[in-house]
Length: 198
Image (cartoon, rainbow, N blue to C red; front, side, top):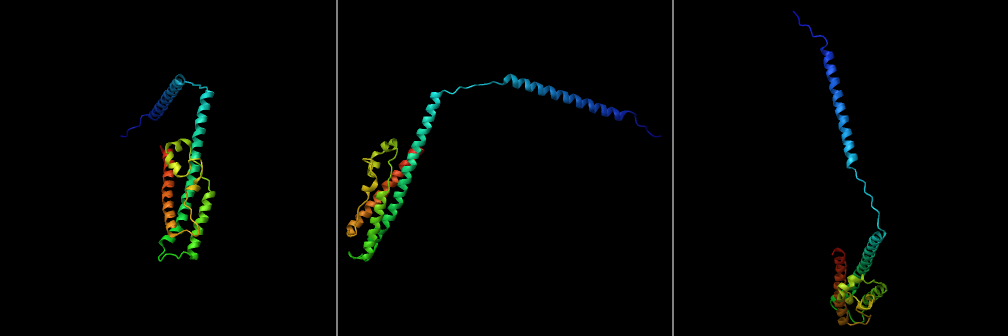
């Protein structure tokens, strides 16, 4: 004896699936409508009219900061060039001081080294190093005066002078002067960095 399948069960499952799907879709549409209504209710429009005076002040502050940063950068770049030239100026004097036995006073090699120093000094005299911005200058006046900025001058007066006939003692003194100046230039560059980083 066999069991006969109930007729219409296949159709019952299909109707149930179709009805459930329709109910789900209707509930989903209803939730979307509620969300849209909630968003409409909670949306707020804000309109801000810029104040010309305030915007001008902000623009002025930004421009002032840019000018300050540009001035710092210009002074630092120039001091960087001075630092490089100081190292190059130091080399021939150091060769004379450390040469053993010492160069004779009339040695052509010694004269050439001294002339190299003189030509580098002339190069540095042509180099204009702008003073730092006023607030940075006023924060450490002594330092900037050591660099020759007392009367808005450049660095030329700060470099030791040596001629082709300078004695070994004068060369050693000039070398010491260059070392001191290198330290001051380094301090100046550090001061510029501090003024930017706070």
